[in-house]
Length: 53
Image 1 (spheres, rainbow, N blue to C red):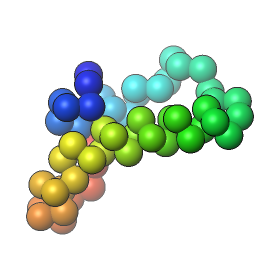
Image 2 (image 1 turned 180 degrees about the vertical axis):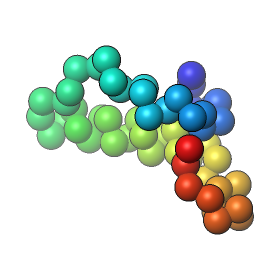
Image 3 (image 1 turned 120 degrees about the vertical axis):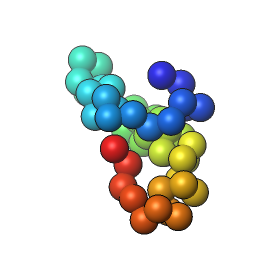
Image 4 (image 1 turned 180 degrees about the horizontal axis):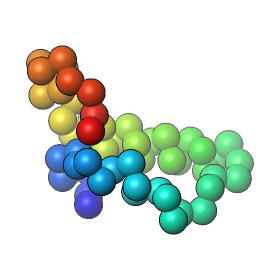
């Protein structure tokens, strides 16, 4: 999956096997990755009043 792919139901498992961020910089990087993924279809979700799946 890339940030240009639509959000998929498997997104919740994306980081299941990844190492947990250990410091602020790693958490910020993780948050930015999530934001980039969610930004792809944000307008469509807003219009549909839907949540990420």
